[in-house]
Length: 309
Ligand code: UDP
Ligand code: MG
Image (cartoon, rainbow, N blue to C red):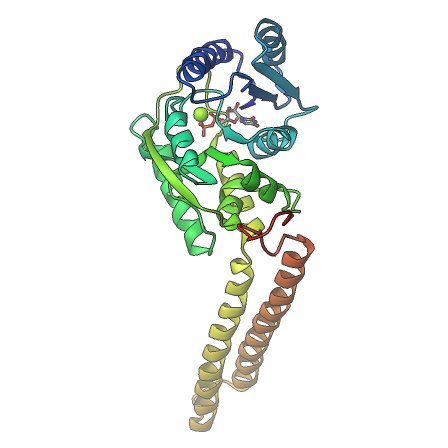
């Protein structure tokens, strides 16, 4: 659970988590030694003190404090990397906009053999129109750029040990989890829920951060923007050929000012060549970029023999 300046809501959240845990343990749905890990993402308020207090009072609360504010995604990764000994984890926001009870459905799906269970919002009535619309544009844009996302899934998801180990093999520094998890490819499914309202505190995702997240998501997972340059180059080059013909015909019929033809031809020709060259360079840069990530090429999902790590 990443927490950034969540003092207003954290006590309430942890109280709810405690009740939820108690009920789940009672029903035999989770192990009694399950715990919630609060990752304090460099909060400037009393969030960390609250975590320490809660951890003292309840052994099921643990805390990790990051030295500075690193952003939601990195805070999540810090948490995921810290839980080396767990069979299964669920990532959830600190504001409980994502319904705790849905975790039961996630666990049920996991017991049915799914390694990854996505929490998907089937309605976002409680989000503002602006948030809904920007989110819609975001998912559309990502799909357009060839990034495979589960629509309306944020970072509320269950992963078992195997999926988590696979995720942590991805070498990139800036992890855009929503785009990476589908790349793992292990059996996965979705559970649906209605997103609740934030009951206290305010969203830490203003527009500037949302744009940052979108840019990060696209550029870290796709080289389509570079390819668009190459395509534009081809388009401009074809147009240049037409324009050059037009200029030559104009010259032939004598309807032009002296010098116009050569200047026009030069401009169009150079424009086309430059854009195309940029595109070709872009293709290579894209390759270099993807290679430097040193991503795992595959994950073993199953084998007829042991020790397949
Ligand atoms: N968060 C974080 N670091 C940040 C910003 C947010 O750890 O720099 C956490 C925040 O505490 C919350 C989660 O990420 O648990 C989602 O943030 P928020 O609820 O503000 O986003 P929204 O639900 O409005 O998209
Ligand atoms: Mg929220």
